[in-house]
Length: 87
Image 1 (tube, one colour):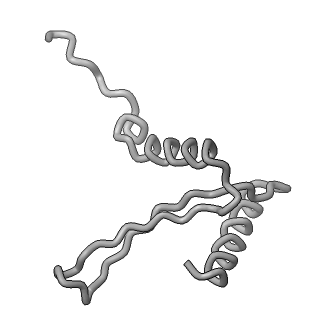
Image 2 (cartoon, rainbow, N blue to C red):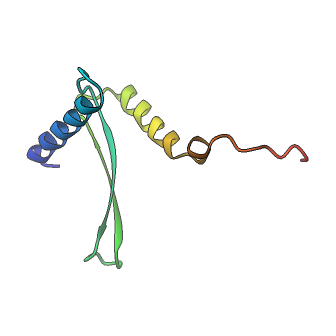
């Protein structure tokens, strides 16, 4: 990612955080990105990228990544599922 793009991304994320939480300032982010390369060898090949703040400590990056995974975990999204006690 170019430095110009990275600065613009960080400014946008910081502005969003400030909009959502008064007086909060950005200390880190992890973003998963998906896109499609229409001219790739395989028709409509998906591309996955990860962007994170350069100053983000390793442990904070791992924690944010786990939180993101839990956000999309079916049990988190749909709530606890009833267990089958007949097994």
